[in-house]
Length: 214
Length: 91
Image (tube, rainbow over all chains, first blue to last red; front, side):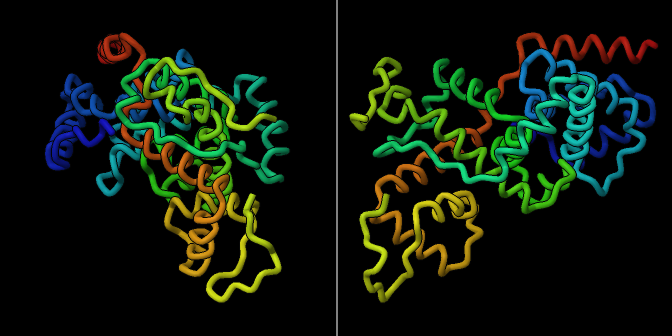
């Protein structure tokens, strides 16, 4: 993650101290390495670029105003992501469609088992394939197609690399629920990217062929 | 589906169904299963091409999205943020 590019924690503490003392011009330097994480967190809740950018920017502006409330015991990245998640959730609540989705449509899914699609084998998609626009678009499309409750655990755990406990705390749900949702999210993402299993992500041209005749 | 019969005597591991494997795929990837259950899943993967394709694909996807390239900031994001921060400071 880009967060790893942040300087040492001592440098970070020093930056925070100076900003709190009035040098607010340094704020961008402080949060620069975390922009992507904050944006991804907002995206995980909202599922589209424009809303995610608005929420992420609002969250970062709030972070500047609230920096006095940040305590050194907490991890700075976690603090930022939490604010972004809260901001994004507030926006989603304002959207009646989002409210409907989260209350009704999601609940049905959680009760039953998710049966992954039947492919005869899986051909490894190498990391280098991420350089391809086609795969990145497929990933973005697959993520956007997940319902928010699945997308948020998937993005926090698998994209951002938080552990199960941190993900649960961040979302205010228990760890069992994180695991249940993570399972479904991972299987759905696998199914969404499966059309490339025959190697089309590698060559960029081979069409998806069904393995079975039925 | 697994080609193994459900009534055969198995001296090493207890049979596990594909459905039960699906339920444990994510915990398997997390490394959160007790050794016995893990061994049952591993034995199942050896015999069941379908579940192998599920675990391989799921693990592959988790690895792909974890490498930090999944999200690109929208073009101009940082510039817009800097402007907003500057406006806040002035206010």
